[in-house]
Amino acid sequence: MKTSLAGIVLAAGKGKRMELGNLNKVTLLLGGKSMVVHGVDLLKKLKISPIIIVVGFAKESVKKLFPEGVIFAQQRKRLGTAHAVKTALPSLAQSTTDVLVIQGDDSAFYREVTLRDLIKLHKENKNSLTFLTIDVSNPQGLGRIIRDKNGQVIKIVEEKDVTQEQRKMKEINPACYVFNLSFLKKYLPKVAKSPISGEYYLVSLVELAIRNKEKMGVVKGGKMMWRGVNTKEELEEAQRLYSQKIKE
Image (tube, rainbow, N blue to C red; front, side):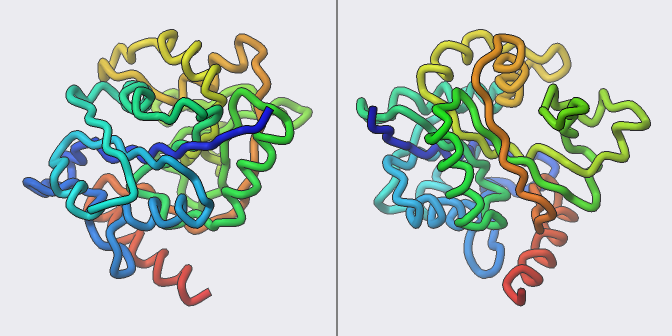
């Protein structure tokens, strides 16, 4: 069966620690271009269609960056990343079989070849879920990848739950996924609400895939310049890293 891949870019979050008023953080410039534009340009290079941007907070600031070529889905209540993806599903083409999901604030750092590898592994193995891991020098605040003695991923542990031993681990989940659409439709309704934030998180699908013995693949991106942006300090770090990436 021929696969047809759509793209979903998550750009609805408030980024409340950024204090940006009526701007969404993904519209901020990185290397002279809005962060979310980097991500969309990458999906276009990969010939992914349709591209759906999930908007919410300060949605007009995102929408005006894209007069054409994308579809917008509105997340009216911001109930987490799993809920955001669910919001995008009605906008998919009928022919869509698989979906690549990226975040609007970090995708400037992905190399085209890395995402091609991710998509290739997913399609060739007919996986339900395939995701990227990367190694970062400072993993603070990020979910650590836990592997068994055979090197298989057995879980992702969020920062607040890590043990002292796990805290030293550098392999993290940057939240870049390819999902089979049937898997998404089956398991999104089974994602549990976080008792702390009241939100539904996309990373929960990894645990659901493992628990239900769904076919899962992982691409190790290795050491990569990368920075998700949630604070002004992280934006400054992203600027430094991006300048370095361009030089290399």
